[in-house]
Length: 363
Image (cartoon, rainbow, N blue to C red; front, side, top):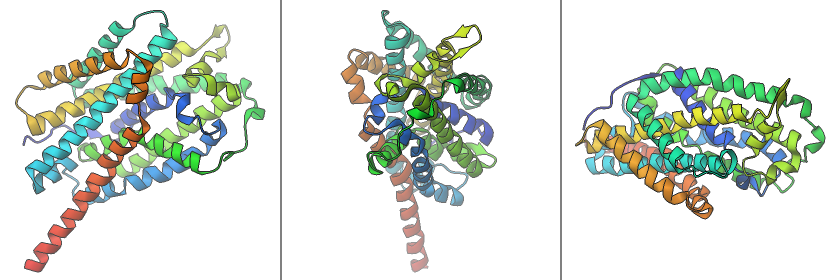
């Protein structure tokens, strides 16, 4: 087993994850929350924080005892077969989210940006660009994230500020209009959509600095962004937001500043930068696992193979919207996120404790 190499600062790591999760937020589809009112999405982040804290407890407990080894390395110490099974789970996890992320970008480009144009070539180019980002490695992706954040965060703030004058509090509806359970369900679905939990679970040993403090700052930052975005979507567009495929893009198209109208072009730029960071990081992680546990070829060959498989999968999904709906499934996301972030770390913790207890009895 080849040891993974390369470290990244906690600041770069969580900035990278913030941009990655921002893509999920700004590409929110109205179908995700069809059973609740938009005003409930202002309360939903509270449940997200609670769930996001609880789901990571086994990971934090694991790395408090084994700071220099990741989940795959700890599994390898128990059994080489177990390590390969766990690595396959994480490769599947990251590949699935790579495909779904780029499929949603394809859906956006094909329905919003170029509705009358075949965007397949643009999708292929985007995947090649993401593969190049993965080829550059972890540290360049981290530096690119910081530079991108300097552009993305002010752009989002600027768009929100231009919408302040359009806010109408009469558009707000009573919270928990349909009860508490639908809001909790949406919060659980949202956690399932957050592949960043899996990235954290795997990469923490490669993060230097205050990784635990950084996690909670990242958690509060990304749920706060979601709450702010939904506040403006609800107060500016009201129920009209629920009729839009990509409501946040529609909201951005209503933003105006001086002679500039339809600031959705800025919003689209945010999408592109965040998509590059997210997909590039996911492809890098898949490649890293393959080299470490199935390493027979050079890194570039694995990247090319993943890129080709991603292109094939996305071209198949993009043929029909119903294929996208099947692929972008909340149950699949919740299951694979729970398995990777909660069940596997918990299993390693429990088996490690039993192993120590057995050794103590024998001695």
